Length: 226
Image (cartoon, rainbow, N blue to C red; front, side, top):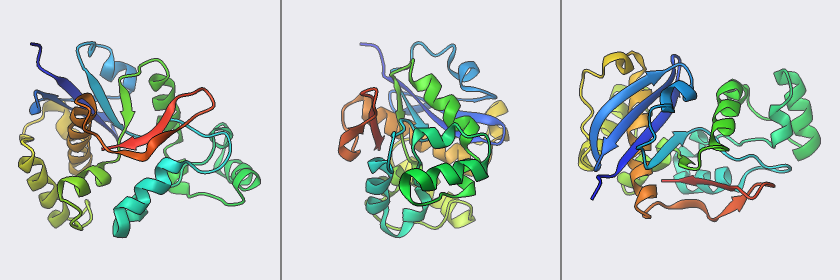
């Protein structure tokens, strides 16, 4: 029987960082400027967990973000609300906020807009590769921790907590990751737990926010899984 192979992917300053698991154990790490380069030689991967909103609504806010934020409780601010599709097609933040207010009656953060390029790239790629699923690292870490609150991931305490949680589920990320080691430590940890979620997705054990998933106009599931 072929061992299960999964990939966890997170956006970083260098592009995208990924952690690959074979049978639930760390296998290797990758760093690439774009998703095509990252995934082109990964036909043997069974599932890919990607930390980026996948699936956009035509009107209104995504139920995935609302459900995940509710589940995270005190860490709900780590989930940002994703505006409808047409908002992301605007050329600048001011136009996007105007469009968002027209559709939803509310604006959205500049932090979310900063992800526009990678968000559109990820959604375009997901449309042609159904192995890709949206995950949320903080929701995944909180699940491993059985709901226990964690220090923020930018702090030493928070990063050590997350590394310990990964060890609890059998994922030991080594100090030497080659080129992938140029990514930030929080991005590497997020990619690793995204791989843990991908493992759960591939084995049918993942939790879905919401459950059942919302659907896009094209009939594609919109859900955060962990």
